[in-house]
Figure 1: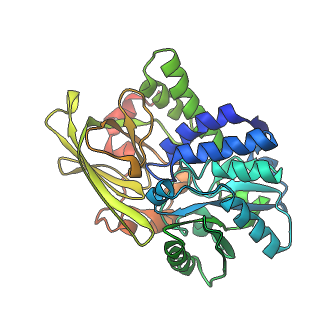
Figure 2: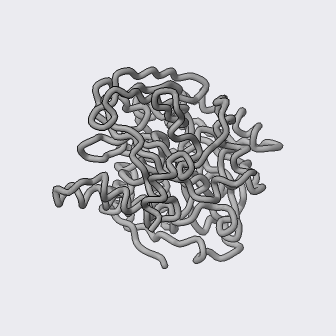
Length: 374
């Protein structure tokens, strides 16, 4: 059933989407400001469930691609995604019925609301990842047969580019090179599809779930209750699965490198409380990909690995990681659509250079999940 999203809901979504983004998806604060500014000027945005879409409706997913840290240093003007969206509409010769995020993530879940408000169209409660991934072909639409091009890209300087490719891997390589030349990030519209495609290929209800996650954290803090417990309870009532605490500790080392349109590196965390004497290492490429405690893998992509501020349960994106932060590492099972054999060939651990097979959180932490099954 359709609902209306205003500035308050965007506040909660900025928190919840960053939790789902697993460290990536862009700066949640910037995306929140862009969406709230547009909603204040143009009015609330209608949020539609995928099943409410006409089968023949044109849906255009949009968002930001590139190294997230670049977006923080080089603040966007605010209309870049709108210009890409309108450019793809113009090329296709048809007005879009609705917009949709490409992924769940801090900025990439919220800036489509700025476009929806300005264009006076709805936004679809779904996306192509249910989390964030670094490459354009790492999306359910690709896994299940949809072409990503034509793609329209805009930079914050006003550069414009239309790309058509023969396959989605070439689209990733070419658009990534363009994004680098645009300064390290770009704002895109791609994977245009029908309402029928959305119903068959998208991860549903990710925006409303992100809002619920953010509300759980915010309301728990207001009531002076434990926000982490509230967050975990909400995940247990979703299509994802109950979250698990993987580690608690203090960041003692952060290594980051920006290049080729990505931010890569790792963070080391010295354990405290029940994890005292242990060491966590989390490796990332835009998003957190693998978590290892004392040499043992405790979580890996495509399951979500999110680092939270210990006291507030607010998510910390990879570009914001700093020495001394006291954190909780949280694992969240990914929806089953993301775990199929076809999907793991696109975003399993080996796709990022890790010589391991994917093992679901529920198997890695069998005792915990058996304990919370009922």
